[in-house]
Structures are given as C-alpha cells and as structure tokens.
Length: 499
Image (cartoon, rainbow, N blue to C red; front, side, top):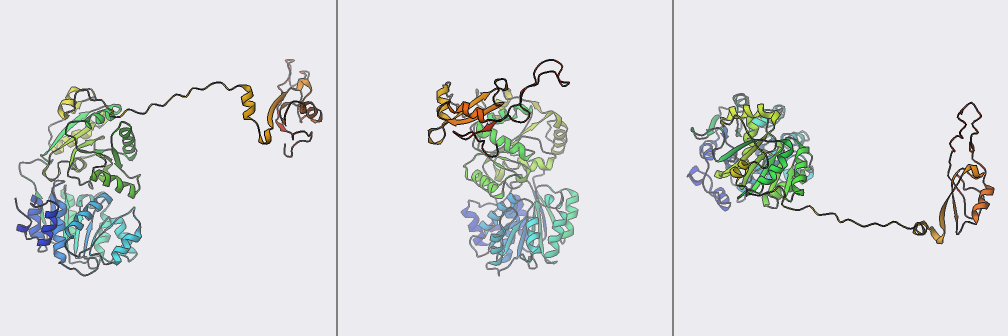
C-alpha cells in the first residue's frame, strides 16, 4: 500500500489523516493526487466508497498553501445538501492543522451564518448550485479568485437539469483555473460535456480490469416480493446475525415516512431522510445515524450520494431504482473503505422489466428474481436470520379497558346543575295539550314554575296541527308538529331576548 507521504502530501495533512486512522491511500487517490498537485485537470472515476473526496480534497487544500489569504480561493460544487455536509466535514478535517477556513453553503439553512463565515474570509466553499448562485447574485459570494474548482458527482451535476446552473457558476470563476470532476459513473456524453469546462483533462478510471462494474465486496441479493409483505421481510432482515447499520431506500417521500412509522412501531430504532423534512431534521437524523443512536436509516434518493458511514453492513432497496447508475449509488452506501456488505433489492411484479435492464447493464447473471415471502426458508439461510424470528421485537402497549356503568337520572340532573345550585330542567310539551310546541328550558328548583310559564307563553308562528281537511293532506292524518326551543328566565314569564 502507498502512504500519503509517498504521494507528496504535506506533513500536516498526513498527520490530520493519521489522527483519523487513515494512513494508506486508495487506488483513485494514488492515481490522481500526484497529477493533480501540479495543476493537471482531472476526470476521476471510481466506485462509491473508495476515497474520491480525499482524491480531490487533498490537492485543493495543499495547493492553497499553508496560510492562504482571506477570500474564496476554492469552490467545490455538489448536487445535494447531504453530500455538501459530508464533503465539508472531510475538507475541514484536512485543514485542521492549518488556518485555512471552510464553509458549507446550501439551502434549507439560514443565510446569516453562511454570510458571516464568508465575510470572515473563508477560503474554501463547499456548496449546492442553487444557494451558490443566490449568494453570488446578491454579491455576497465573490468567486472571481476561485482558481480551484471541483465538481463532485459530476454526472449528476451535468445531467438531470443541473447544466444551466453549472454554466452560470463557471461564468463567475476565473477562465484560467484548476478543474477536477469526480464521480462513480461517467457516461460518454457526460465526459464530452465536462470537457467544455476543462483544459486538456486526463480521465482516470480506478478499477481492476477483472472486476465488474459493481463492487466485488458487496453481495447482491434480489427477491421478487409482494408489496404487502415487504415490511415483514424487512423486519426479519433487520434481525439477521451480524447486522450493523442499515440503509433502506424508498422511491417516494411518503413511502419513506410510512416505513419509519411502521418499523418504529415494531420496536426498531429507525430514522428518516427525505424531502418533506426540514434541513435541521434531516441533519439531526443523519447525525443520529452516524453516531449510532439509530441503526436504521430510511431515505429517498436525495441521500443516496451523501451517506458516508463506514460501518453500514446492509442496504435494502424497498423499491427498485430506475436504472443501474442509481442502483450503484444506492448499494454503494455499504462495503465502503474496503469492507464487505450486503445489498438486498425487492422487485415488484410490475418492475421486472427494470430489473432486467439493471441485470444486463451490471452483468449480474440473475435475470429472474427469486419469489420470496417472509416465511421463505432461503431468506433465513442467505441472510443468517435466526430460525423462528418474527417481524416484531417490541410488543405494542395494550390499551386498558375502562368499565363504565349507567348513570342514574338523579346524577344527570345533578351534573346539569348550574351556578348557585339551580337546575336546568328540560320539559317537553305537545301541541295536543295546548302547550308550547317543542321543548322549553326552564330554570328553577322544582316544577312549580312550569304552569305559570306555560300560561304566559304565546304559540310560535306556524304552530299547531293540521286537521287533514285542507287540500294539502288527504289522508286524514295530522301534519307533523313543528318544534322550536325557547328559553325563559327563572321565575318570569317574559322570553329571553333573542329567543
């Protein structure tokens, strides 16, 4: 293995890496750092989790010098907020032994703190295109001296609608600059597009000739499952022997939140990262996952390129990704830094054509996913799930039944007592008894006020019965009585205003 000192890296950076237990370089770092340090433009391509961030980060930090002047001298552009946080943390670690300052610029966070760091003279900016363009348009971010420019996850940046934003950013940086593009996948059209922004770049692919496109240290399992059984299957996989941190990818934000609620109800310590969450909530959830407070993270593709956790043992695709590039970025969350991992993909019946395309592109040799249910024996065997495992590790709390008894009429009357001990009694009178039609509420201590109140009462308009002799009714039956409610003051015969 080649050490970073052998690659010509400054001693203070070597010490910063060593403090994190990083001593030997990965192939992508070994091939790109010696070329990039003198200023050669680089297109770096390597599998996810093989050290691309240090591959471009070390040259950027070292080329700025031991004590750079205040002001933005380097710009690193990333497609997602989660990736911005990850890259910021890595670059900040590289600069821990020198006064170089790093700031992360991305949406979902307040402007004030980011602007304050820029005004304080930060030399390296890591950011997403939208917020970078916003601050540059307000003249709060000056990129005219940014001679170091990096596009991380370049295929995502230059594809899928990011191209106009990238062109705006490159119009604000110097024409003569050192440019690096890094990604796990780099299709031919994207390479041609990237060359527009670079000067005689060298394209470096760091992979073994005998190794396939997918990482060799990841075991891929593909199951054809029923949508109603997925949660149960996942709950049993989460109880497999040796399972560490697990990332589960869903297609939609709603499915992610639903799965979090379901797994939490089953007793698992799960968190989520998706677009319906605020940026603070997403960062808290990601921080809890990295710190080990939560061992299951459910995410949409927004986080597929921003989860850099070394001890992820399992990745589960709750829904199959749309293409092989998305598949590689998802499963690349496990098997990082040379470790091994397991990738489990669920394929619905209607998505079999998607798996056929991914299988052909990645040369898996698994054209037909195995039909699998939560009780399938091969599920237990392939994932080392203990026999007899069920899909719940915590029993839902039982609701205690409360015995009720009928309340006596006297108790009801007592409960209806108003202020001063008076009762509000409900009396019903019928028109056939020549009394007020409907129910009258009378306040008093007894029924003695009732007749007096009835004598003072005037029939409501339209009250009475129909004798059946008119043209409206020919059945001889009386019309239904119309009822009205009226209130009276206690002890008086005059109606309450507004009655």
